Image (cartoon, rainbow, N blue to C red; front, side, top):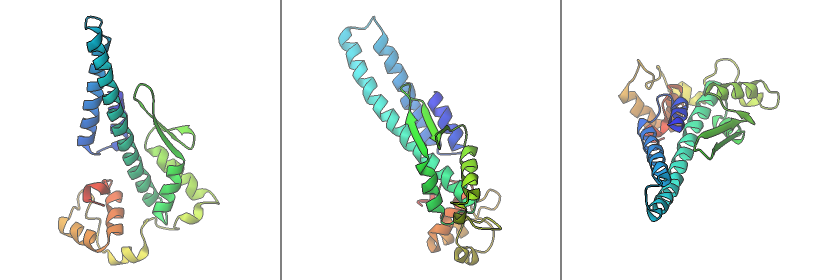
Length: 200
């Protein structure tokens, strides 16, 4: 279950249901592969198993690709917000252009960032930090305190982050989501949570 372990490292406290689905598919694929290699089975049964392996393998690869892309997108956006990127989406898009996600023949996730192997989520922060100090891209980042949001939204928002652990406030979350989806998304990302869980 190496693929699932790699995705869990990327996800942190991410969506457990998606991880379980991928783990199930990976386990099912491995079981079918073992059955297809069993010489005691008639050749017709082995051929049928091989076709099943191919179908499960395609589904497995697609789920892994989708989940890896989603997790990387969230990590990149959170890193851009944390670094004070303005506009956040433009910086995130630039980072994504330097990122490649592929699956090896064995079904393992292979991620490279700017041509270098992706080791852990802090690689994203280091890459964005290099952008922040690069003369060609430093204009995309704010000076001073790095909030990552637009100042109008920040002025309208008073109080702490209602999504952060220890200061969760469901009423305030609902108010912010209803009045300013961009601010809500930024605060959710700052709290280390996936905006998709809130329909954003």
